[in-house]
Amino acid sequence: MTYKESFIKFMVDSGVLTFGEFTLKSGRKAPYFINTGNYKTGAQLSMLGKYYAECIKENGIEVETLFGPAYKGIPLSVSASIALFDKFGIEVSYCFDRKEAKDHGEGGVFVGKQLKDGEKVVIIEDVMTSGKALREVLPKLKEAANVDITGMVITVDRMEKALDSDMSAVQSAYKDFGVKVYSIVNINDIIKAIEDGVIEGKEYLEAMKNYRSTYGVEY
Image 1 (cartoon, rainbow, N blue to C red):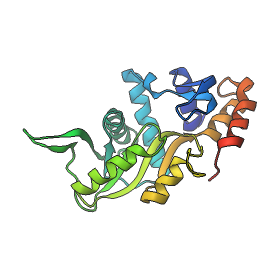
Image 2 (tube, rainbow, N blue to C red; image 1 turned 30 degrees about the vertical axis):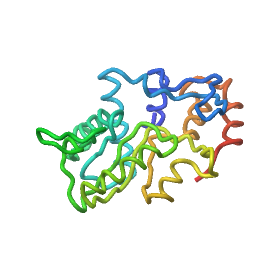
Image 3 (tube, helix red, strand yellow; image 1 turned 180 degrees about the vertical axis):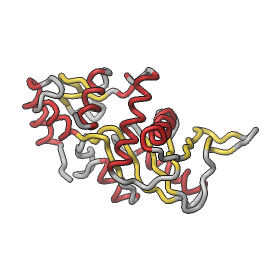
Image 4 (cartoon, rainbow, N blue to C red; image 1 turned 90 degrees about the vertical axis):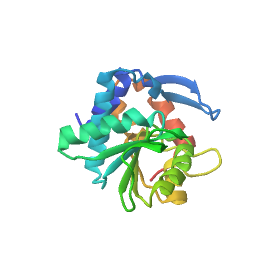
């Protein structure tokens, strides 16, 4: 089993990836749903970190510091930095932002590694729906230092058109900000995993493919 197949099975086993009929925030009716809020144990967090590390290594992403946007990105960046060292012997720093700047103690907006000009930074997030999180953290990062954002890593790329565009959030991130987004898996990987019997759900294949045909984009 590849790490991508293993991750898809892990999502199903964790109750994060489910199939049925779901009305999304966008109003679209989707045959699958991803609820990353169902990751809640130390074992799951440890596994998540390993999958992020695999994605970074496989894609050869240059990185010196992993940045986790508050709040969901905080444990993700920590677990991914640990996994990079444990699995591949790659030592990186990590940092995360505060929602509000601290005016006492060490102060500032960032916790962890203090960023420097030219530092290679990878942003770690769970999912990317609209690109709002990226739009919010980029000015913070650039204000801290003239860092080199070498990529952003998410768990799943839905490869789905935005409501106001024919591009996906991943495509828009590159067009608008020049940030390349890598995903551990995408919706095509999930469909193939069902077809290959890695996970159950063959009864949802037709609906999955129809949804892709209606809302999907190709890279």
